[in-house]
Length: 439
Image (tube, rainbow, N blue to C red; front, side, top):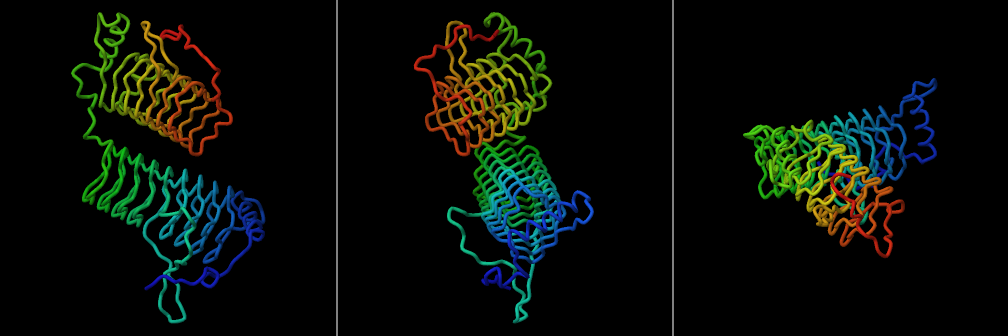
């Protein structure tokens, strides 16, 4: 059995133009909304390449065996749609919703699913076969010239939580920073795939072939890794249960330790004891940290992943390489803290304060060098004077964000719109001397 190299129009049952597609989609949207005269969209074995489905509602439509090569599906709804055996190569699916969609056997090489929601989607193995005149079965897979700068399937930043990827063939695919909590990926072939920074909490990888994968900085808490092949994998910075300290093992309760630390701060170190939470898994301590004042805490390499920390006060803290990914941290106070190398991917930092701090006559500027702030909500955050050298702010939301006088050397700003941010600094600005921890 071989793949066919015939052009799409010689393989598929038919081809429609954009005008006809709009008519059919309008009828389908009436069907979805229960309007009389509506009709479910059924376009099986059709060549739909290059057409636009952007931001339309295709929920429950049937497209089995069709080609969407280079089609625009941006922001479209394909919930519960039948896409069995479809050719999605190089299609644009950014922000598309594919909840509970049947995606068995799809070919998604070069497809872009950044931010796509594939909750409970089925990507297991499957294949559409067609009969040639020779009566030999041929795989429905049309050879086309790949567009420039495109490669393997792109699932980066996609939402794949609870998706079914059992037996999926996804070698060398890009899953960077994807949300993959509780995904079933049993017996999957993901050799050479890139999972850098992905949230793989409670993922089931039983029997998967992960030879040569990149798992750098991935969250694999609770992952099932029985009989997994992981030769030559990059495991640097991976967050496992086994490589974190647990709060349950503290000899003194966390409440008592926080009280002792508060006393230590209030007495300038004369009484109490400084709190050091370096390397601990903090996720079971959400109630202790909500709107807490934790001035001068040390928590290097600590994991706060996904916690609700709105209003937390972390002034003058030592937090290099701390993991705040997916955290809610609206109105958080980080003045004067060392956040070098910290991970904030997809965190909500709206109205957060990263200004300098003057404490005991010492001026301390926030250090965010090499920090990861990709996809963060930084609206109205104050980053004046912050050191952002080498930081990654790609795709961050920066409306109203104050970058004046910040050090922006080698900052990555892919997909960032600075039009509504404050970036122009006056010739000389003094750091306010009243900027202290009590304010």
